[in-house]
Structures are given as C-alpha cells and as structure tokens.
Length: 319
Ligand code: NCD
Image 1 (spheres, rainbow, N blue to C red):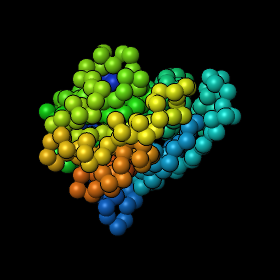
Image 2 (image 1 turned 60 degrees about the horizontal axis):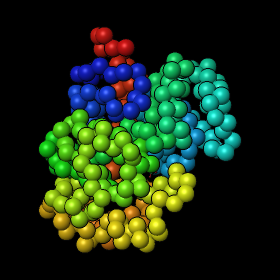
Image 3 (image 1 turned 90 degrees about the vertical axis):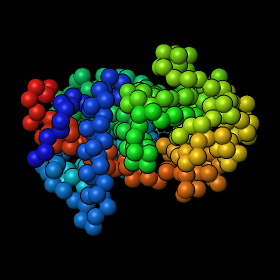
C-alpha cells in the first residue's frame, strides 16, 4: 500500500488551516482515481469492510451522489440518511442522531448541515472520521478540492493564476473554501459581486474585492460563478433577478475582458439566466462544469481513502 507523503488529520472539516502539502497530496491521490473511474471496471477494494454513512440535513443532489459513488467504487458499505430539515430540532437532535449512528461503529460520517459549525460540533462527539459535505455558509472542502483538481489539470498549476469568484459571496461556503485553498496554493483571488452580497469580513480573507464584472473579470484565468442562494436570504438582497443578471450574470459580453483561454466554472446547481447564461455555461471550449462533477468523484475517493483507507494510521505520528 502506498502511503501519503504527509500526515492527514482524522477529519476533513474545512480547507482553512490545511497545509499546501496536504492539499497537493490529496490532489495527487485524486489523479490516480480519475483513471479508475474512466476504466471499464471501476471497483477497487481499498475500503472493503468499511462503513460510510452519508448524513444529509440539507438538500443535495451531486454532493451526496458523488460521495455514494466514491465510497462504493472503493468497496465500502454505504448508508444514506437524508433528514428533512423541517424535522430537525437544532442542536440536541443533531447530536443525538450523530451519537446513535456513532454507536453503530461506522468508519466515516459525511455530514451536510444548514448551520455553520454544526459539522465541527458533531466531529467532537463521535469516534469516527467526519467529512464536511457543506455546513451553512462556512466551508465545503471537497468542492474546493474538486475545483482545484479541475483547474490544475487544465492549467497545469494553481500558483500564479488569477481567479475571480463571482456572485453571492456572502452565503457561499464554496467561495470560502475556495478562497482558503487557492490562496494557500499561491493563486491570486478576486471576489466580484454586489455590495449586498459581500461578507463584512471579506477584507480579512486576503482577496481583491470588485463590485463590477468589467473590472473584476479583467485578465482572469478562471471565472468561478456562484448560485444566488435565495434559500439563505431573509429579505431582499437583489432588486430583481433580471437586474442581477444584467450586472452580475455571466454572458459572452462579460467574458470578453478575461484572459484568452479563461475557464468557466460553476459548482451547481445552476440558475440559468440568473447568474449564468446558457450560451457560456454550455460552451464546451471554455466551460468545465461537467468536468468539475467528474473530478468530484475522484476527489471524494481520495479523501475517503486518505482518512479511512489505512494510509493515515500507517503514517508515523499521524493522529
Ligand atoms: C453547492 C453547495 O451546496 O454549497 N453545491 C454543491 O455542493 N455542488 C453550491 C450551491 O448550492 O449553490
């Protein structure tokens, strides 16, 4: 068994604080799984005998499916638990559910929750590895890793690239995790959006802030669009959808100021005609949106392998 060249923590709760060497090691390991996924027989027995529980307190299509496919391709037994948000009584129920599942001795819990910090809280109570599948507006580490893998494969590097993350920055855990990852790996990050959708602490994240797509997209290598997260908004953050699209929706015209060969990304699900025009979303020359989904499976295989595949414990000094 190959071991990782760096030690991994027990859990993957966020990108913040994860060293560049660990990020690179996870991306390198993900590369090996791209080949597995593209071959006729996609099954390995790396996680044979391990149990992975997907515990989702919030709606999800691609993330939950992607973790399920990833765990199954590595031979793990997978249980999916989707807890309707309305039936969740905060705090106590989350921890009660977690402790009940913990007593069944799973090897990993993949958790998505609508409250920022809920996954960290849960991780402190259980004995198994915990992977954050997205917590509130906080972090979505595997999304940032799959975005990085997609970019690294297309551009050959992350260091030195100019990346614009555009739209609803305020409510986006994808933006937060990507900012941490890209900056750790030496990329330059801009955030672009209306002032109403910009976090008040944005200056602390070490990014350039733009309130116009014309200046924000100028000479960028990567345009990362975000969904307008209306479910996290109380009150009105944008005047109207058509107004939002006019100023911040990505279309052919706005792409003109980017660097030649600039890539278009979106974590999904997309609101066509709100944050992105179909003509650019479906432009296979520049849009890598489906590639992001493919890379997502490889990245989640790598994360599961790194945390519960026996590599971590094989390492001297690993926690
Ligand atoms: C993202 C999420 O859930 O944070 N989606 C995803 O995981 N692919 C982004 C979003 O919902 O807009």
